[in-house]
Image 1 (cartoon, rainbow, N blue to C red):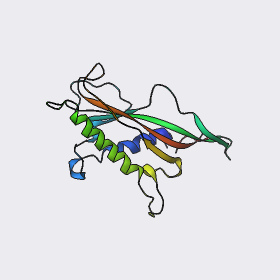
Image 2 (cartoon, one colour):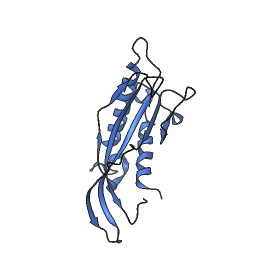
Image 3 (tube, helix red, strand yellow):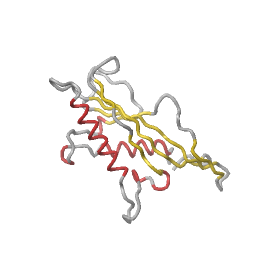
Length: 171
């Protein structure tokens, strides 16, 4: 059993692992270039690379709370992840590869968001069943190299509306 928020990050990792030219994307991501909880990269790290982490400020204010049968509280709340990608600079336009990688990431996340249940009748975003109500993919921001990165990069927020049980936070 794992905490719901970790399970969500694993599901996002799985969705991003689908990014390959063989699957109709512009980039090839491999398992060794997708990270969770990593914010610092060096010159020896593989590019392209994508990472995800929680923002430093907790804006996950509960939307609704209800007393559960186990004595805990079931709450519907927002869980925000920042998804950030790094690429080799394009020539002569350094940010062009960041735009194409960000489009690949949005496409992979949208595909996972629109996933159907096994019977095909209901939406089952990221295969998380009743734990996940909706997923909002916010607009991408692309930047050239700067103090944050020696190469072009992008970031975006993805907001998951989740159902948590405080008496049993594992799933």
